[in-house]
Image (cartoon, rainbow, N blue to C red; front, side):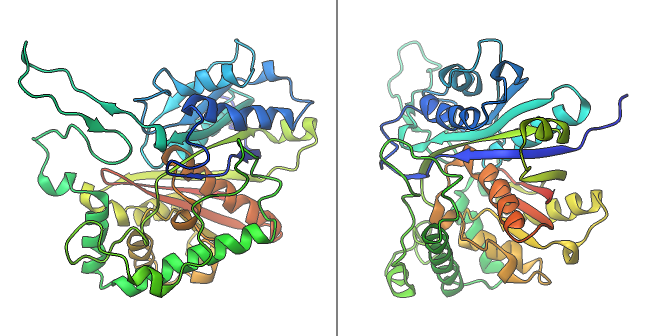
Length: 392
């Protein structure tokens, strides 16, 4: 076997993350996926599009306009040569990071020299689906939404495993003594930091214009503890998780160029960072909110590092309850090094595009700070957790 190549994130582009039924909702999901791919290639005129070995995109739905291998469709819609293949991967909320990992493995083993990877989700356009009946003439037929969460649940699964993600995150947070006020405070922090990053122009060379949208639409700079306190519980009658401290429903896409140091030099690119390790773990489905903890330990262990070696952290904010539950199991982490420019509570959580955004944001911020080691982590429905270690 050949010696493994080092794997680099060379560049990345994403659309703004549109709010539910917002400025991106009129764009077909496959067209949305094509936008950052076309922009990424256009930014690098010395890259021969025919040399791209593959396109990997994460997507969690697959039931709508993205239903026929959206990575392949997006490559064609982006104008890549018909000889460039594509593969769509689904690991729910970590689908896009899984695409980066799979692309990295192809580059590391020499199966590919340059890959486009990322993810897409058009949650506003997620269709309703109608299962086929077991009866010839069904007396009742039920439509199922495909926007987020469980549908067509298998009755063999225990009830606690198929509860809503919000209710599961709330339950674990309660066990750990994490209350409503702490969750709302983290949500306010996210909005404040996300707004400040946009105001400082930190995303100007990274986030492209899509349609008429130029900024992430879910950020609410005026969010306060008082406004969040007025919201009712979203999942249980007297619960702590609300719409205000949960990630919203969004539309968005991201594309990254993954390749070798030699490719970076030939294109005159200063890489965003190097992917040095990753790990995905599994736990009880209803405890997904703390699954990032063992994933982080496993990924760091693979490269002989521990928490003290990490300069920055990005933990995808599916729920404030989830982030705080994970951080409660990592007490030695300085919170000022976590999600320094906000997270999904403010930026949005278009499922297939969220986890690669976390990895790219981490790499970009490490570069701004002069380099270092970072960990990007995400919880995943059905009891999974994932972590990616980057070095800049």
